[in-house]
Amino acid sequence: MCGIVGFVNYKKELPNKKNVMNTMTQTLSNRGPDEEDLYLNNNVALGHKRLIVIDPQGGKQPMIQRFNQGEYVIVYNGQIYNTKELRKTLTENGFTFYGHCDTEILLKSYIHYGKDVVNHLNGIFSFAIWNTKTQELFMARDHFGVKPLFYTMQNNSFIFASEITALLEHPDIPHVIDVHSAAELILMAPGRTPGCGVVKDVCEVKPGWCGFYSKDGLKLWEYWRLRAY
View 1 (cartoon, rainbow, N blue to C red):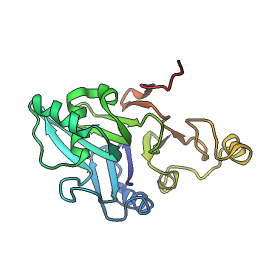
View 2 (view 1 turned 90 degrees about the vertical axis):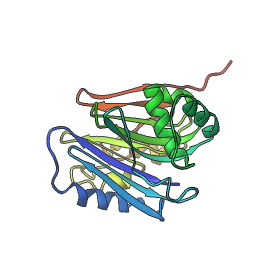
View 3 (view 1 turned 135 degrees about the vertical axis):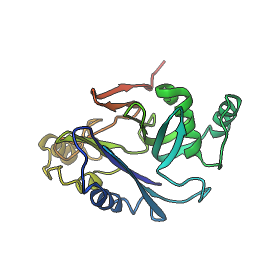
């Protein structure tokens, strides 16, 4: 288990974002006690807390891949089960690999497939990938929502994290309980309405959903749904 966190603000560069990111990332130590790192670049900040399982050197995050005069940067929590098949396809399309972790497979799969990468993944995951060339953040959550991914919009900042506790360490997020969500927890716990968080204005990427955050705003869509026949 790992933890991811980050935010994007196109309006301004935040001079104290490293301090904010350090604080937010530290709240995820229970998810990733072994290693942590940050990626800071102009209007974006990404953080990762890692539980090391395989490839200690080759699986460091945030992971950066330079491609086509730009950079792709990923923070990822999960496990991709069909890495062998994906690696074979990517190799046939000219990709080379420096390690054997699924993070590298996932990042290069996104470079190859773009937003359709979710249709090629078998696993449990939540991840965000920043494209420096297009200035877009792509994010996705696995089919059944095993891995969490929460987000909010505050003061022109799009902020996301594996846990709400990490979001609450961002200075722009008010600590206000959403009345309807609190009522759901009291009356229906552990059940609740998909997409909602307990804190006011905090949402979650629904299971089987993905999307972009860009200068045009947030656009999420459903890429998979369980169907009965």
